[in-house]
Length: 426
Ligand code: AMO
Image 1 (tube, protein in one colour):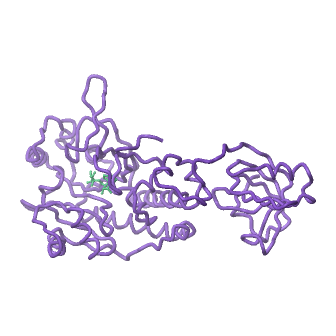
Image 2 (spheres, protein in one colour):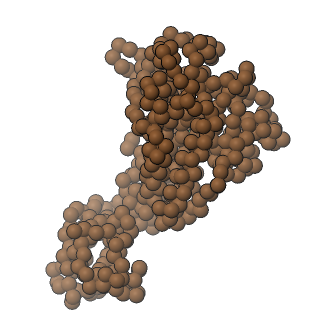
Image 3 (cartoon, helix red, strand yellow):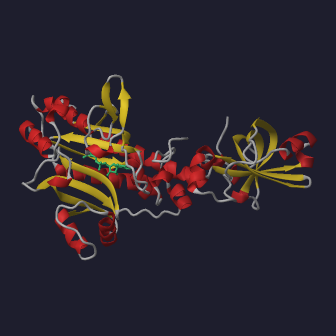
């Protein structure tokens, strides 16, 4: 049975094992060949002395090249001089596939590559332990988030991504051709997760793509992102923030506990607070306005976020936003302020959420105030007529959260096959 390189330790000395993976490097020194074999979990040295392995096997091993795919049966040999104190004496080697050389990208990273080249050759780029570490941490985060949701009584749902209306403002929609109708790629599961609050499912979550026709190339925006969305009934903005705090802190602790090796590979020291501070929009403005110009009612500019990020240092919520810069479904706290919040990490927005309007008349009025037509929202509004409980929820950007967990500056590094203005393949 095949085992991983990480399972081979000096105390297995003398055991016969089977490994499979890629040829990381080959070095021939006269009658001795060294091969470094790489699999998902790491690397191991295979040492083939001609006189021990025989003429035929020696020739085969010597013929190996970088990134060939091989299967090796061999004997574990404890050797203090070998990397990790252990190596393999090969008994059988099967060449499963040859790699064409020169490679378009060097997984051994002797030659560093630009991000664009890396993304063009993502399958090769992903062979680097440093790149794999990002996706192992991302997977751990998603597992942790799901675990918390199940523990808290949430039901996982899937809502349509082919939709008929906008939710987050009209400018960022991708129109698509859908038979005779006008349709779009879903910007957010917002309307559907709210409609589900009228179903009695009570607490739902969805982890799925959201599509935003962002025209600008930034290091924090994608055109296809993964959003972790929740909606909870009989809850207000505070309950939703408490849940978000729990989800985020659990994920930080789980990644810290279970992905120590990957955090080390990436050189990341996680920032894990005991709790997450909450400041109001007005308090945020006080901090910002000493450094950059801002008026009450303005959304936070990039410069404003930077000032705030420097001052706050770690995770923090901004609460009580002006209604005019929040979506129509936001529950008002008073005439000007909404029960809405953002979760920030330094200068990066990780999540937005709010208590929602659950009262039909107020919701229709709010849609109109935003200059939208209630007719376009009939299918959604119906759910508010026949018993809609108060509810709240949020959307957490999985790719952005991964940036923080892996210490990456560019969101594209945290997505296997990112979609941006220039990139539709691979
Ligand atoms: P919002 O539009 O703020 O809120 O999105 C929620 C979170 O999703 C992430 N995100 C993105 N990540 C990468 N690239 C993008 N283009 C992008 N757009 C959004 C961010 C953001 O904080 N319906 C509300 C959520 C709610 O109220 O439940 C919504 O979509 O991390």
